[in-house]
Length: 177
Image 1 (cartoon, one colour):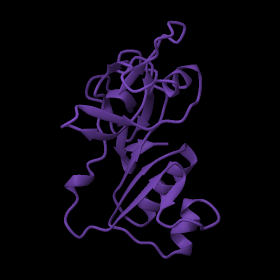
Image 2 (cartoon, rainbow, N blue to C red):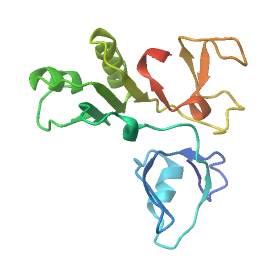
Image 3 (cartoon, rainbow, N blue to C red):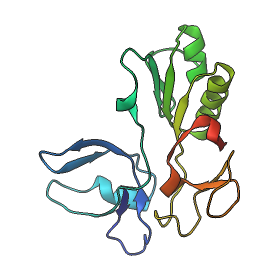
Image 4 (cartoon, rainbow, N blue to C red):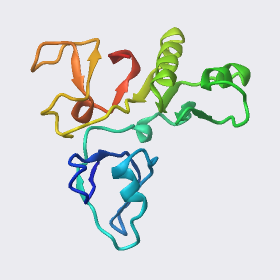
């Protein structure tokens, strides 16, 4: 979703991924890191405060569509889950702990996503990665969040995708990062 700060000097919405949806309570749970003026404002919100949202934007992980018995590796924020306590990066943790999977889901910093993409290609494992680029408009009009792809866009006929509308989750082989 795009979350709009009330401070008018922060014009554009902040793109934040949905962590959880509680349909019964009509609530979204958003988890974010304070990175600037807009997210700092959100960290001071109290229960009952309201914000304007744009969304739901793009597409997310389709974890619930995995076949029963599928072994998945989940990575987020540069820390593999599990294991906890392995020194190094996530690929060091995979190697040190002999982890194997039928599918990979990952979000986090670009160097980590590049390493996971390469690992998935080398091991012929499907991997879904969430690209965490800055999104400006959130509706694909400004082209501020474009990434290179392996296929041509049907509309523009170039090898690009808009992260806010075509992503943010892509099969790792589809994007050039």
